[in-house]
Amino acid sequence: MTSSSSSSLSLSRFGQKLCTDAGIVTLMDDMGDALRVNPDMIFMGGGNPARIPAMEQVFEEALHATLDDAREAHQLLGVYQPPQGDAELLDTIAELLTREYGWPISRANIALSNGSQSAFFVLFNLLAGEYPDGSKKRIQLPLTPEYLGYSDLGICEDFFTATRPSIELLADGFFKYHVDFSQLTITAETGALCVSRPTNPTGNVISDEELLKLDELARAHKVPFIVDGAYGTPFPNILFSNAQPHWNDNTILVLSLSKLGLPGARTGIVIANPDMINAFAKANTILSLATGNFGPTLARHLLADGKILQLSREVVAPFYRARMEHAVATFKQHLGDLPCLIHKPEGAIFLWLWCKNLPVSNEELYQRLKARGVLVVSGHHFFPGLEEDWQHKHECIRVTYCQDPKIVEQGAQIIADELRRIYQEK
Ligand SMILES: Cc1ncc(COP(=O)(O)O)c(C=O)c1O
Image (cartoon, rainbow, N blue to C red; front, side, top):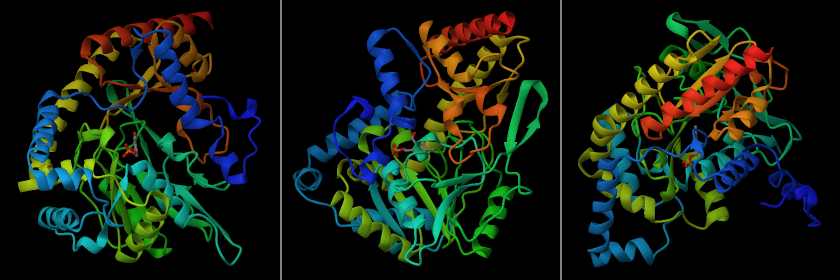
């Protein structure tokens, strides 16, 4: 992608904000380039889900069933969805969530989007930025590291605030982040709180207690609480620890079909109170006219008889748990006595490595690993809103374990070898 700084295109403030070379765009570009230059690159960056044959078969069957039925095929190809999404599908989602969790919701509480990323763009900009009375609000991230895809979503500057976590050192070379409530202050400038649960990049799962405390704080200050469930409950349920699903009418829960194995379907699901859903659906219609039909069509099949929950619990979660356990064992073996800790993997599809007192920046480590044919993601990208300098930001990397275990082993070996060189060069 051409750099905006080298282009003569004259862009509005909005255009300039969205066409920065920073953050997720540069990263995705860089990864694409690296793979073009070296197709044999060991790919431990990016957020693609793993290929799970049993899931691919279910998707294939659903597609065949759709195409074999003339009415369904027409629904897939020949009609626009209404602003919130197909009413029948919304009913099915509401029934499932009420049946499973007792949430008092109906179709009025649900809207679909073209991927959850675009849902976050709409939600964040509905709740933060300039208000009609001249005040300005921000999206507050109570725990960083947090998903780098949020970083550039605000259409005005200075869009996020964030708090450093406290760090608990655990046995066996693990550590865990916690929300540091002593540092968390909600002010008149807080437009909404937002957490991803499980968290991308760390695999952390904010505990039930932390979640309830954040929920109470949000309600006390009358600000919405956004929970990003891209990896969480009820689907795809990539969770290795106990986490109670959470929703009330101050919560905006955002789900996605992507990590079930359907990133190409671009389908997000927003669950919130009816006023919020109404606002969201209007904004989303202005932006997209309608959401695509592909994801909702597959979702209809997957939701039939609660199949999506069964698949999440019996296929997706055990698959990733096995991959995670293998990746942890492999990294531990190769890292040996290097001063590197692994964040306790409680969910999602990544390991987050903290290389204590790393003599070079994590960005340089990323470049050196790329030169040796391994792509990871430098951890410094994952602190949106955290302005203060913190050495920890420059000591972590994210690796995905979605590739074949053999490839993860090769990657772990090269990463450990390069780290050993770096620590020895010091
Ligand atoms: C935490 C988190 N939220 C949201 C998204 C966006 O996913 P999608 O737009 O595919 O639903 C991702 C993608 O990787 C993610 O990791």
